[in-house]
Length: 111
Length: 112
View (cartoon, rainbow over the protein chains, first blue to last red):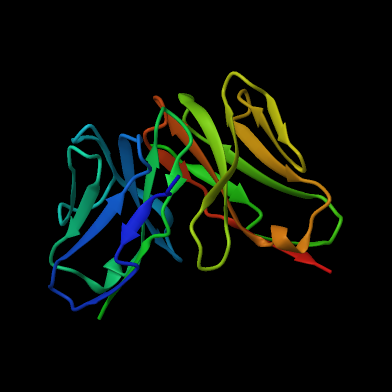
């Protein structure tokens, strides 16, 4: 059974640009969440999608957005990138109310 | 809002000893408490979790205890091995767990 797949693994962008990250959940998992991991702030919740609807959102500016497709795949977008957006972005999926499985993440570097 | 405090931030033990990591949460509605292990450069992996209707759960060398009255939960690793060396994160979830709030992590080092 394939795990949570995130693409790309690494990304380098320039300040002011925008970026789109992709996440394919485990087959059958309808819930997809996104987290930002940095050395200073740790793991912070961005948002959660279920059946193409955003069910919960963390305390991030509107530059951070996401969506989920009918096949449960999800994308997150960050516009007008700032240096502070450099982080590991983790996607997690689950089939019921518990038991998140994380992907390997996308390492975003903003220069 | 939700807040999870995790201690200690670093922990060094000798191989074969036990390791204990403690977390305290603030939200009375929290009902799900997972623990994740993250090795360097890898994804966080769920190692054990506990729900609010249970006070203790064990899986081989790993156990988690929950005290809802005091709002704290702990991870216990017995007979530690070098491969247990990693960063461990506690987390809490509410309302079906569609959002997890994580602790700041504990760097565990198991020395030979």
